[in-house]
Structures are given as structure tokens and as C-alpha cells.
Image (cartoon, rainbow, N blue to C red; front, side):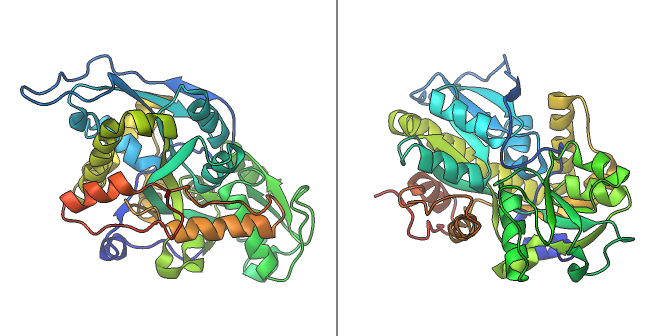
Length: 371
């Protein structure tokens, strides 16, 4: 991928730099890792109207691309909008388990990548979730061993890792390979390039041991590989108009949205204010992200990883809906999924209400909104 964008450039497009966290994939995986439940929640402010639910269960990954959730929870910026409704955060390590929790009724709202959002919507035939906001853009890079790979053409015949078959980065890499005129079997990963599906937590060791020659991965995995001697060959943002593409959405259970729209609106006020706070307080937000990471996992990122990863992600309220549609088309082209019916996957009504009240421009669902 192209060189990481500077903070100045990110500000110029009104997106904010996000925050580096664990080496987890943004597509698929296993069960929820842990639940962080804050016992002390603020009571409703005097005179403020209580909301319709006593609690709201919010899922996220301890991951760079879920910065809005991490900072919003750490700083209390989301719960502040809830007038005493209790926030119950749940940490997941990949998409399918979060979708299962949402569909099973143990989760109300979640931060999640585009591929599991699409799969969850399609598998339920449009009955179980809606995308209600964007959260993050960018932060995906192709990092390679510079001794083995010096140009993009050198990838032919090499072993390149992606987080999981059919996940967001895997789909993007398979599409890139196809546009180079090369061939890879999407199921086995074998072909002109060997696509090795590897959990992001394992990828750095595989890279150091030489069992892979590079990886198409999200931050902070990409910066971890660079700290281990890798070189950024391509930034996925360079393949998209204005360097923008969705990497994280906010989704909601349709049942919860119908029954507790006031709570959903309050959460969205919190996420919009969180993104503003990140933009205005980047050093504090960076520290906040690492504090949340340490609280959730017992670890925080080293400066050599967090510093280069920081400018590659931009938090954004805009779901960048047209880019989700393109990612879906790529998955179809790679024969990983059948052509999905995505009409109705977005409901941006409450987000646009919040944005309008905050004096911000409304955002588009690219014709894929609920009727």
C-alpha cells in the first residue's frame, strides 16, 4: 500500500486518526474474549428523561480499527449521553462471534468490519441487523520482506498472509491479484501468489520465521511487521478514491433499534462526540486507546508500533457505503460469495439526525438504505 497518510492530510478530509491496539483481524474468528462491565454508571441527570432501556450491550474488538469504541468507552463519552442507562461492553476477537451474539440476542450494538456485516445481513435475509454508522476508514497495508520482494511484480510466486479466508483484507488482496492478471484459487489460496490465511496474532512470528514473505493486513499488525524488518510496499488506501474505504461499521440488532431507538440515538451522539474528541485531542486519545488496550488485554502497544500506525486510520461517522458495495462486488468476483441483496442494510436515519443537530453534513447510504 502507499505511504501512510499524514495527520494533516487526515484532518483535511475531516477524518480523525484512530488508535492502535491488538493484533486482531477485522473479519472472522472465534468467541468473545472477555466482558468488561463497568459497575459504576452515572445516574440520570436531575431532570433528564431516562431512556427506554436499563442497559445497552456494546461489542467491539481490542483493535486499532475500533478506536471509536475504545476511546468512547475509556473516556465515558458514550455513557455520558445515556442518562443512566448502563453500558455493558463486550470484547470480541473477530466478526462471526460478534454477529452470533447480535443474532442470538446477547448483544445490542457492535463495531465490526464490512465483510461480517454483509455476511450477517445476507445470512439472516436482511432480518437481524442494520448498519447505523461508520466508524473507521483505512489502515490496511501490504508489508513485505524487502530482501525477497522489492516491487509489486515480485509478489508472484511468494507467500503472502491475509487474516482469514473471505475476510475484508483477504477479499481486497484477491481482487488486487486478479487485477494484476494473476490467478489464485480462492478456496485453497494456491496460485500465482500463495495466499496464506493466518491469524493476525500469529502473522508476526510467521514473518520473522520466514514462513511467509509478507502480509496484507490491518494496523497495528502492519506496523508490527515493519518493526520486525518489513517494508510497506502498498497502502490499500491508494486503491480507493480520496484514500477512503470502510474498515469498521457500527451495527445494531433490528429488534433493539425498533424497541429502543432513543438508546441507539444516544449511543450515536456518543460516537459522534468521541470522534470529535479524538480529532481535537489526539495525544490524549492515543494514550486513552493504550489504556483501554491494557485494561482489556493486559498489554499496550510499544511506541515503535503505535507511532507509525497512528496516522494510517481515520475515525469517521460516514459509513462510506459505496465502498462497502464495492467490497461486496469483489467477494462475488472472487467466487467467495453469491451476489448478495444489500438493499436495506443501512439505516442512517438516527445518525443523520444526530449529525444535523451537531451542525454536520448528513451522510449517504448509497441507495442501500432501509425503506
